[in-house]
Image 1 (cartoon, rainbow, N blue to C red):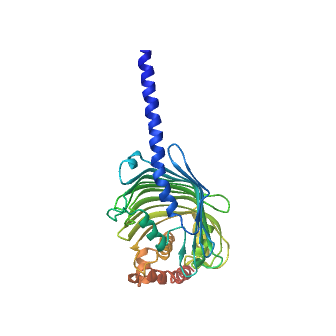
Image 2 (tube, rainbow, N blue to C red):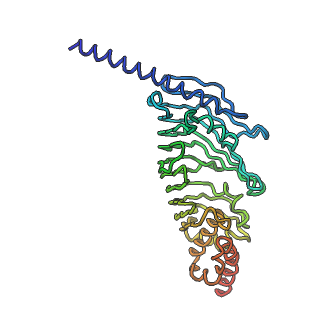
Image 3 (cartoon, one colour):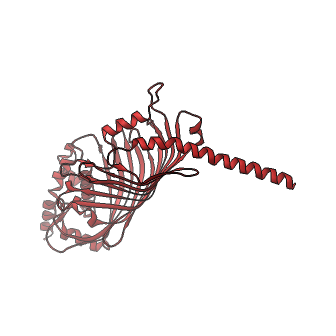
Length: 374
C-alpha cells in the first residue's frame, strides 16, 4: 500500500512539473508579440516569465506629441493555455490588469483623446498577427479579461468652464469569452466601481453582456449615492438655481441593438438641497420644486425611458435624458403629461430639440397655475 502511495506521489510530481514547464514555454511564445506591439509613447519597466504566466510591469503610455498621460498599469499578467503550444492560434486563459489607471480627455470641439490605438498602430498590430503562409490573422481567444483595483479619470472641456472632472476608482471588471478576429458573441460582463464625491464616494454596479464586434449590449445599471454636484458641468445650462447638495440613486435596463438604444429606469433624488431664491431646475421653478421636496421628505423618485438612434445627429443622449427627467418631475408636480404634450410638446417629432423647446415653456405653465390659485 505504501509503495502505491509513493508511486502515485512520484507520478503527481512529474505531472505537475511538466505542466509548469509547458506553461513556461507557452508564455514565452507571447512575449515577442507583446514586445513588437510597443510603439512610440508606450513603455514598460520589465517583462518577466513566471511559472504560469507572463508578467509585464510598469506599463505607461503618453502621447508622443502632447505628452499627455493616457495609461498606467502597475502589472499586466497573461496566463496562456497549454493548447497554444500545439496549435497555430493563441489561447489565453486570463488577461489581468492590476491597478491600471486610464486617462481620457475631450476637447472643446468634442474630440476624444484616450488610451486607444491609432489607425497607424492598429495596422501595425494586425501585421504582427499575420501568418506568413496565408496572410490571415492568427486566431486569438481570451477566456477572461479582468481589471483589479483600477481607476478612470475623464476631463471634459466640452462641458464648459470649469471643465467636468469625473473620477472612478476601485474598479473591478470582468469580461468573458473574447475572440480575435472579432466575432458576434454575447460576452458576459461584470463591473463594479466607486465615483468620487465631495463627502463620500457613490457606488456603480453593471451586469449583463456585450457584443464586442457590434457593440450591442443588454446590461443592468445600478447607481447608489452619487453626488449630484459632480454632474454640475452637464446640467448647469439647464439649471439657473443653485443646487447645494444631494445624491442620486438610479437603476436602469440598457439595451443597445443595431445602434438603437432603449433604456427604461427610475432615478431617485435624495436629500436634494436647493438654495432659496429665484431660478429654475430643469425648467421648473426652484421654489415649486423645493416645496415639493419638503412635502415628500426631501426625497423624490421619477421614472424615465430613453430611446433613440445613436447614429442620428438629431439624437442627443444627454439632452434626451435630462428632458425625460424634467417630464417626470412635471408629472410629480401634478401636471399630466397629456396636458403638457398638447400645450407644450408640439415639436416632439423633431426629437430631443423639440422636447427641449417645449420644456422651456414649463415655467410659464407654472406661473399661470400659480395665478389661478390666487
